[in-house]
Amino acid sequence: MSLTENILSNKLCFQARILSRCGREACRKLIGFFFTCDQTLTVYEYRNFGKNRWNALPFITRGVYLNGGRPYCLQDIYQGAELRFCTDGPHLPQSLRQQPCLTLRVTDVDDTAKRALVTQSGETLHRLSKEELSDQNTLKEIQGAVRDRLKGHAVRTLINLGRDLQTLHLKSDWIQQKELLRRSLMEQLCLTQQDFEAVWRIVSRRAEGRVHPADVMRAVTGEMSENRKVYVKLDPNKTGSIFLSDTEKFYRGKQESDAALSKLSLLLTDNSILVITKTVSYAEFEDYYEGLSIEIPDDEEYINNLRATWSI
Image 1 (cartoon, rainbow, N blue to C red):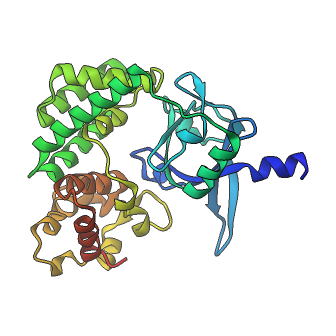
Image 2: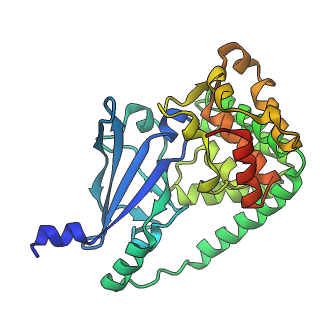
């Protein structure tokens, strides 16, 4: 086997998405490769150039990228993992270069291939440092307390928080952003000053000082698992927003008596901007379902609700 063949055969393929409240960015279809021979990784974006014509274009240049001061390794790549990059890459669109950092969420990975590569490469298990374990436990405790307090009004609260985040995007001063975010989270989630500072510190450390308000909110409330997400199926063109008329084609919640399903009216009618534009943005849709996910912790029940709400 040639050197090139060896390099290409010893790679792990994974799928990912961008963590962003911008629907156009979040809906980008990404596929990545991690090469065990030199611990490099690269990411491509699948782009549609017409009927049944898809091309894979460079997105993240192949290279060694660091995670907490060490190169990413096989064990860093699993469903739900977050991969962070600087935004000065040559292939990133201008909209992403303006962000403090780029975070990708791994949505799917071939676990069988991964186990074989770990065995073959002899990669040792990376153990979390005391600081990383402490951060993990702190977030878990804060998220648990917040989600318990949200029970019964999670949908409306997260929709309101999402609108607050939209306002924050208009503020260029990060100090002002932090203060407004702190007030919003303390008011709507009853978050203490101490807990807010702890979350901000953890997010800042993980992102090497490049903090985005949406990352802080996500760290406070947690996020639903990948198998609960449905937006992309309603927005096949990946525009980042969908017309109300299009949602009505798929929506059949009016036929259901379940109280949880009827709450969708909060998203579809209780929004002055939406009434004017006649569209639902990716962020608004995700906020609604993040709230519903908190109200329905059981996966089977949640999936059944999705199937009863949308004919997709």
